[in-house]
Image (cartoon, rainbow, N blue to C red; front, side, top):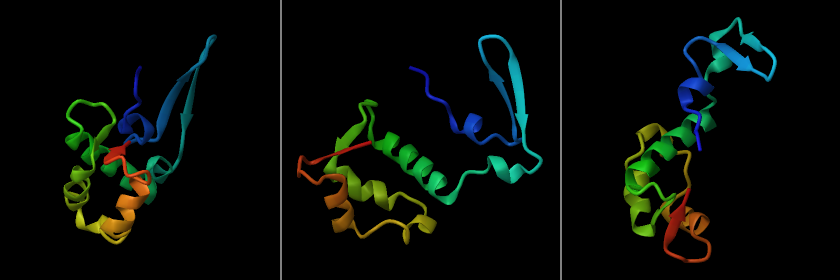
Length: 102
């Protein structure tokens, strides 16, 4: 499958070309902030990038032991957004399977 990257979702210039079966359309915004990711989207993208670093096989899961270094590798601005480690561990592995899935 093809995954749309962040540059297509949030381009530097808010201009998109949309294709349908019969024609192309151009969508644009007058403000660059229309294409800017929200704080939650930025956090999710950062988490997904960091998760991929620990998920060497690209299987979509890592061992629970990778959770602490994964969270520790996040930039400081995200430290206040995430819950403490024990709460986070219970949320991402509620069945105690010792894996974290994306």
